[in-house]
Length: 399
Image (cartoon, rainbow, N blue to C red; front, side, top):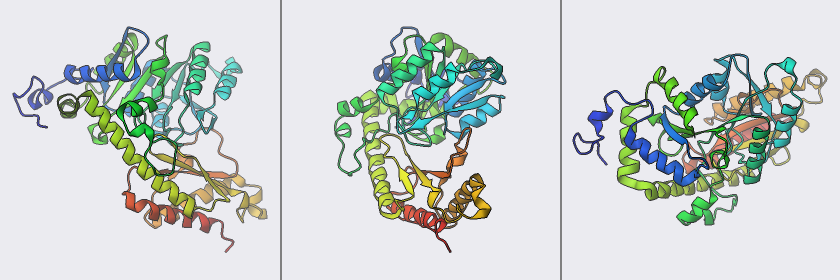
């Protein structure tokens, strides 16, 4: 693959000039074809445009849909970058309960049904990470997505679908054997859950995709898809802020995706990438079962994404029954979380505190940590989990 001047109508010399806010026409054509092939939007006037990545896209979307002081509905644990983007615009996050399938529809409906006008305008935006959720690793089932979409229609919610992990499909069998869903391209495609974009019939979804988790985060390039009215407004905001995505990043993606791989090659890459992530996930799961104290730790088996969410029950913590801390369980949770984090980091293992992702009321007598199997070498994962487990066990030592 090369970007030599003159070899194509879109080459490096063109990419180094000012670009279109919607993205280069050549790359945008490929992305639009890709979105149509994967998601098959149910209405005609939809379109995509390129972005400078999801964090930038979120900042623009919140400016479009929200006013200062508005409440945005989010999962009770969510991406801190989203919360930072909201705070910068004077917005407030309201956490919706989660279970093993992600956002809980009944809690979403209850909060909307019981909304008091004294609390301010009823929320208009629901922000969700439906697949391989960050940080919990949960994936909403097809049935749950339909439930949530129906609630959005009933209460006139607009859904921001942030889906960076959508194509990282690993299956839910932790045995380490090959998954049927990853053996052939058609079976891999069949594993992809229905997106909110694919369910949408009224133009109330803005879907966000990114190259960061499937190609390279340094590209700082992604795309959004929604109704033409919304995407046109998104492009107008881009023109007076980021202006356009990186030209060199776009031409590299164009040469790779359109000129080298094509749509079939892109899907083959995604299927192969998912298989590698599956192997890493299974290695980490085996290490968790081997090293973590099962009487105080629990975790799920993510079938998508790159995260594992470990919950530690402090009910057996030796300090919980001390007079000094019994009346202050929240302080115990904060201190225990920090000690486990610091001990792990001191021994070369970086985990993410659950409190960094928390929205609203802290967990009662529980602490959580997000682990990722994306960054470390596969051979280092077991050692890293053992180190983390030692930090957890030391927290429950009575010494």
